[in-house]
Amino acid sequence: MKKKKLGQLFAQVKTRVLLLSLQSLLMSFVASSCSNRIHDVPEMDEPGVPVTIRVASLEQVPFGSFGTKGSANLSEACTWINYAIYDADGNGLVKPQVNQKSNDDTFGTLNLKLEEGNYRLVVMAHSSTSNPKLDNPSKIDIPSNSKGRRITDTFLSSSVITVTKGMQPLSINLDRVVARFEIRLVGDTIPGAVTRFEFEIGKDGSFSLNANTGSGVKSSRGYTDKVNVQPGDSVIGVYTFVSEGSTATRIKVVAIDSLECEYGSWDFADVPITRNRITVYKGALFAEEVINTQSSISLNDEWAGADEYVMPE
Image (cartoon, rainbow, N blue to C red; front, side, top):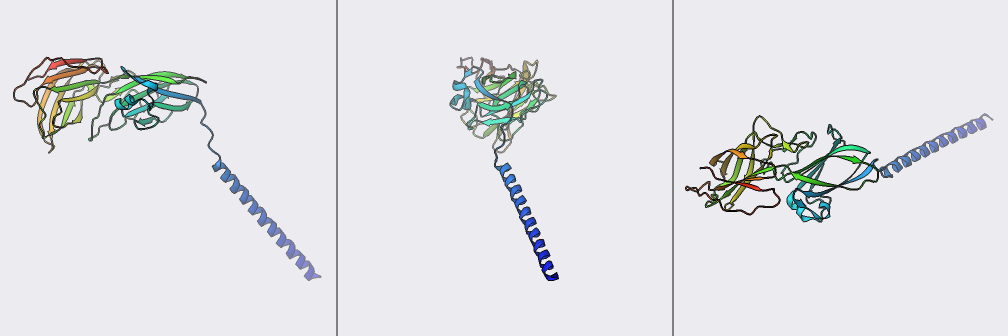
């Protein structure tokens, strides 16, 4: 009898262990299934109102199809477009900065979602080697880079936008925010030994931009930009942001040879600089006899115009 009860007790224990094991296995299976289901379910759509931003034109350079990939002119005018969205007062980014390259399929068009309300939108188009950080719209620094130009032809839009349900795509027009200083050689050529020109821009020019005003941010000292050249080039130029209230700046031009030695240098005092205008100096740099000329030139209608000067002796 004791053996029978002992056997029954063992069987009951065995059954309970089996049931507990099955229960544990089932719970693990359910937990695993739920876990997999969570990972398999696609993420919920980001909340907010769908907003489409399209670059419609650069100053005096209209584009077809609102500047989408189908318009070749946009990618020819610039290689980068930067987008930044701040709160309405421009105090902080509400979305990470977006940088589009000219070979991107979405170049010139940005799709995103925002909550209803007012925002400050800054859109910047340029061809600099490095992209600036747009964390602070009142001081956007173009980073220096030894491989190429620091400041290029640059266009900007800064405006307050209102996001509402069912809103239409935003068509954005960008204005040029740089001046250009240009040397056009006449009766002269660049020697074969010269590989680069360095332009030392005075403090009235700037590599920092205030997106709220479209003007440069004046610093205590200027900056240097570099332009690579080849024999036969007859036009050498550089861009700069124009500091608030400035109309002229000093520019020193230095020719550098293949051995990284100075080949020659020239000082240009009080060079007029105006946003969206080209200041042109015509004549000779390297020829012993300086040839002055007042011949007419053909202006690129992308710019408001050019102001010509005779090369200083």
